Image (cartoon, rainbow, N blue to C red; front, side):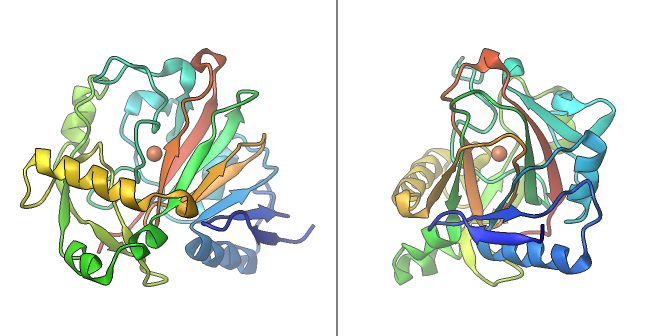
Amino acid sequence: MSLKIRPISDALGAEVFGIDFRNPVLDSELQTLKSELAEHLVLVVRNQNLNPDQLVAAVRMFGEIMPQHLTEMLMPEHPDIAVLDSRNVQPGPDGKSMPVGSRAWHTDHTNHAMPPKFTVLYAVNLPETGGDTSFANMQRAYGLLSEDERKELVNLRTLNKIEDHSYVSDEDRSRFGERQSHPLIRTHPDTGRQGIYLHPGKTECIEGMTPEASRIFVDQLLDRTIVSEVIYRHRWLPGDLIIWDNRGVSHRAHADYDLKIGRVMHRVLVRGEVPF
Ligand SMILES: [Fe+2]
């Protein structure tokens, strides 16, 4: 079966058929996947059946794999892979146990100087219902704002830190805890499109604003711009591998299933450039 790619929603994303990452991928196919990813920001690659080595090899075709914090989630024999298992979820500052990534719309790992350009999630075990992941096209979200507001936002920067959650280990805090300044509006290096670039949980402040004023500003900005027309909600199927571009999308896990069931995802990150 040859490579077939078709849009999966009006907001963003494309669905990919005819690729088996256990087998060699042609250069021309890889170039197509990369350019479709830059265009659609999310690729849903269907019908994969990958062991950890094959998963890592597949992701490596898209760039350099980068280390992940929350190191206790890493697979011991394959530390490039984080195992997101709902049975291992730790309570957050509010005492609630919520799946990783379900607290707010966010882009990944902004506490790094060169945050991941791509995140890959591979479905290993899924609940019968629920456990969806939603994606928001942050380039379109930015486009919803007035030209005057866009001109203001383009000058702002966020100061990012690792979360204060008790489940972040001291070791991770010392390795990954340095504050990082990033532009609030990030430009995609391939397409030149600009988008809102935020991880609310990791944003200590907008530079020049107090943390309290920053929180209100960030919440209001996301409320106004992440609206239905920029969102795609993905209902996972067995064998789905999703690769998304953190430079242009935010995402959010849904906490709508019994965590004890053991929704298991394997996650790998691809190193990005310094955001601009
Ligand atoms: Fe995430």
